[in-house]
Image (cartoon, rainbow over all chains, first blue to last red; front, side, top):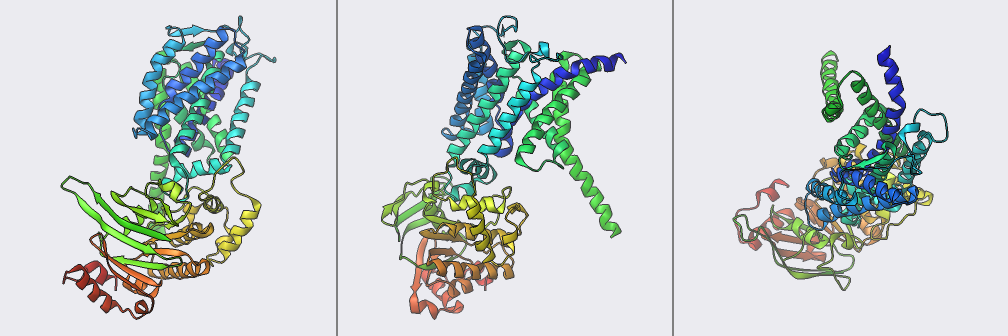
Length: 308
Length: 265
């Protein structure tokens, strides 16, 4: 009973974290799913978002404005990756790794040379804080992060339905076709990477406030968590969610599931140092599920064939 | 309409794999010319089309369309005057997007793509009519993913997309080669209908000599990156396959008739 008690106790925190990380995963969805690019710069731009936001708030800046500036910083990070990829013809994965590496130093500089910068909810008017996550009051972060997720999904749904957004989807799906239709493929890739990293930094800014500090390592493994959310969401919601907006909601749900599973494994007594190992294992399993399912259905198909 | 002057293209220059694909080729197309292009494997047919479309740059020479020099224009900018259908049915459409979305993309070829909604109701109506004219039953499947269509349907759709916004030049690169004979004939018949309806200037590469003779008002034959035969008008109407093979052997200076061309009847 103690196990379930503490699990129940930890659930609101895990759900909140899942929702905020879900925003990051939705940003990743742009590059990974729509543009078919594995963008590894997110590990860096997530921390950039957190660092910029925390430093600005500590300097007395309005938290909303701080979040906005953090998004711009993330967008610039995405732009660097995009330029390395499109103007220097460096493969997308390598471009992302280069940006991520460079951002480590830049993030340290942003944080005044320290690996961790606290931002206490007692001293600053933070937008979200995990301290109030179990409280039934206006300070509870849940309503705000749900609203922000809805806004991000709404924006994406609108944008990818516009002429420009459609041309970006075509670019990701079939660049040859896109070129033949007069679409500037490289510009679209640049725009996608900027958008994606801005949303990732947005999520980083929220997480930093939520946990009360920016940390140089806060983005480590972000891409894995993002992919996990995308894939877990797909595995669980594919059958019911066909609409684009619902698919994005599925990503958010995927992130929540991921954090709940993580919470359960922690409650089972695994230690926090093993977190990354657990994360990688969860992602590997969920990445493998679609393939296993296919194998299983092929086997079933063969059996069915014999009967027929 | 199109003027190609002395273009050259060599792949893998300076390596053991060096291949002269286009050798000092010149060609002038008049408005409304429907030119069929034949030649053996490696004669440079597809390379010529790709150079016109800007898939890769020419080594030397110039390409002029409508009096405008497009030699150094990137491919996506040339698309505003070009309609293209590729050999591979998968290449000309976006599989994960709906039929109507593909058509809407094509309807904006060469135009600025802004933040207006990607497709309008008026367009949907128009697409329905145009699809109905193809006789493939696609008019009721506007919101089907293109990936679910057959190769022939996709190729017909690509053809429609290529001419939805009337191109100055239509480039068909063996667009029926990957289809079964019946479907290929259907798509070719469709091509004829569309080209004559819009009076399109067209370059159609084919492996099939019979098709090359039966379609268009002008036929060119390529060999080793050059145009070796150029027949038009009344003379073209009198062409026969044996005569064409004979012409080819003479023009290319080789007595061995090209296997690939013989095999394709």
